[in-house]
Image (cartoon, rainbow, N blue to C red):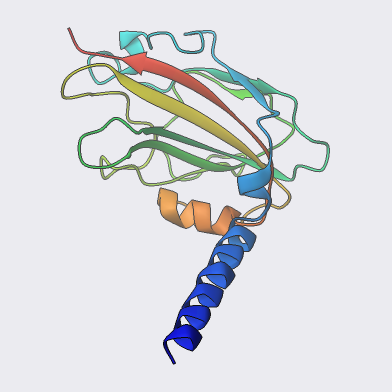
Length: 184
């Protein structure tokens, strides 16, 4: 009985892992093939105060290249894994046209843009970009871009977890830009 139970538990664990992998699909396996940059800061360098809670608190300009031809939409998630309690979400953007090559500085904090781009809820409790505001120390901020094989059927204002679930199995390429920030 014990051996049978252990075998059953082991089988369920393996099946669960395979299911999670399938749900994430291409997203977990896609390579970092999209190059995402910002004219405001270099990879691994400090994000200028202008784009933080200590400054104007507007979104930085972002540029990308290397999108797969089959991309139907793009999504961006910006977050801080160094926040004390949890990874803090600073920006959620989705249904960006794959025809675009970037986002301008200071994107409006509207749920839906005229071109169909949508923004989601941040951990600040609002829609649109919320800049770095670390309580102490130097924090890393990851701007992650995802190319998707479909346009997402989602309402504006979605949270990061909702977006990740909707993207599951549809991520065909990704990339990231990391900047840092600390208060003096």
